Length: 115
Length: 114
Image (cartoon, rainbow over all chains, first blue to last red):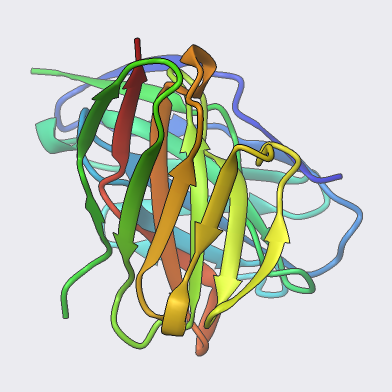
């Protein structure tokens, strides 16, 4: 069974600085999708970024980028120029290509932005 | 294009009562998913529909839980004889046939069972 592990329950970063959130996963499949979702306090879960495993190029969305290391089964999220609005719980998530029926989430990393 | 909506946003009930939640997916999204999220955890899959057909149910979905998606549009999740352990956030998500693997989430329904 696939698993997703986020080893950092909480992190803090100074406003305007860069922070990296870690994620590892376990799967025997060769093709899959990885995601980072953001869940602000008492607000809706929002898709931040998506990576297809067959693509070697790391995905980028404005200030958000990933470091996808397929062999190491690692998928970290880098947030550049951190803003107060980035404060949230961040979930790393996995979805199979062959069984695209459910997303498997990590336990999340709570990110604090220090003014 | 409106996002996924859920109703109610909050529900407080007494143990043993039945509750029903509604989810309206993004229009034209053919897949609809239900997840449960407890405090400090990531969401856990409960069940999903493709159009009106319920294709998979998690072992988390006990006999007290039932979900429907009549006509392949909105969905309802009913919990019968609620227990305190059912207290959680219930999230709904939907995805398009063009990009099935990417799910968009609603705001959730927070259930508290007293």
